[in-house]
Image (cartoon, rainbow, N blue to C red; front, side, top):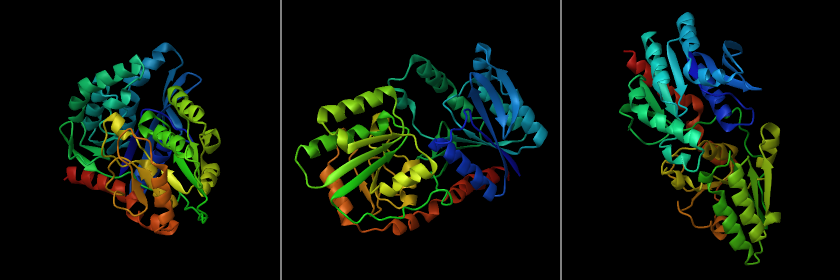
Length: 375
């Protein structure tokens, strides 16, 4: 069978979402699909829609091109017809509108089955403080998303919801590509220094400010154990300013290191330093209580213990996980130290515990559902 993985943006080498999509595509191949990807590029303001490595629509670099890339999907439908695509997997981009609805209707008329992935749900509260233009996009999405759901065969969710927008869901977990994520090789044996590490495209819902405030309180006590906080990723301007204010006012500059975006061997090297991963500590701020994040799975695949505050059924009862309350209190650094020093795990035992979370096993749930709708 031929399938098309449809996204409404491009790829970035260091970006976790880009890596996830590539892992998912490879998983579909292992499930027996001939897999192609449709994506957008915007290089030097020149907008193009691609299938794999060739352009199917060149929108140009005018203001009109900015509009056309959002509403002109004829090239996708033509490709699906021409190539005999039978299954389209769409990554929802909060872009329900009359034009995407028309696209999905046309794809169904071609005989395609459509699975719509909603990466994070609910997502409305994530727009708090966003510019008016982005909030306007959300407003349009809110008006049309239930109608849009009528024109897909299932919705793929990482939540525990059985139904979204009136459509039955396929519940999966964010997966792991074990071939691409190496396990931590060196096991830290001294308790005099503990290295915390957060890897994310940093937003307010990651709650890293809670760790920083916890460090400020901790270092006022003149502790014997040095706790370092390594932050990998790029925060937005507002988040960066707020984090720097906490660091500078709390005089913890020498204990917090910002690395910016890292990938490949550089990222692997940083993970060798990490004793404990910091997951999301502020998902309650965006109205989310139950989510299965990519980062939790990467920490586990690399063999390091970690902490987070949401509900994640895959990890909530694991011995190498420390759950933090989903509130605004500073993280108790003493709790992190005590937990880490308990050391009832090894990197290998952590990695072995998530073998069932391979991307192939997760995407096979979607494949089974699509096959079921074809009967």
